Length: 267
Image 1 (tube, one colour):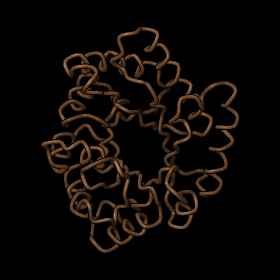
Image 2 (cartoon, helix red, strand yellow):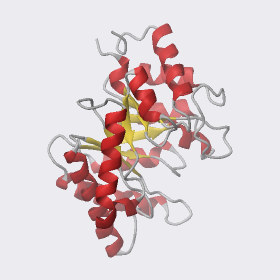
Image 3 (tube, one colour):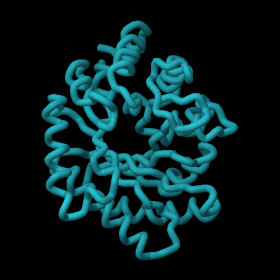
Image 4 (tube, helix red, strand yellow):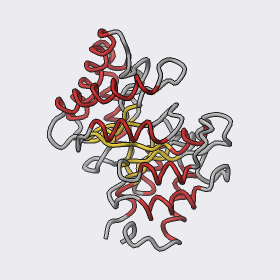
């Protein structure tokens, strides 16, 4: 049976993430490429060195790692063809850096901005874009498209189903789904997307903004959410903690997985 630690990652923007990952035996989701300018040639070596240092500090060499790809000003439904070409360049440069570290999984944002383009435009344009990226990915490499401003789970479901590629899956960010004040509960998001999701982002908020609170905060029923995920989703789904402080959330997960019997998660 799989150790649950093999499926838990800590976002490197989270305070103390490398040290906490080392202490509890987790791995990392690396955030150093989130800001697109870090991929510029003059910044790239410094970015790579920072990633190397984080991996060493976490003692995560040889472990599975996840990369969070760039997202600043990147949206696959852009009308300007030069923006689309820039996106292709940013993503494929990120994939090259992933390959340097043996990383085969990268999270990217859906890019849906409801006040900019209607969903009837966003979905087909996104399908076209992600199919193009899919064809360029190395063998065994998977992208996870993450909800951010998506108002309901069906937008992401339509994109992932329409793309219809094994190397393009969904990442459900439960904090974003809560902060967007969707009329759908987190449980309904999971139910709708359970066949598309390969990865989860875990953090909390009180429903007023994207606060990236700890799993222990009580603002969201994280025990109920995690139990629902384990009951509904495939056994290969993975989890990244995206709370601003890493250790309290790591302790929460330790307690959750060690006190509630989840046969598929615990040795």
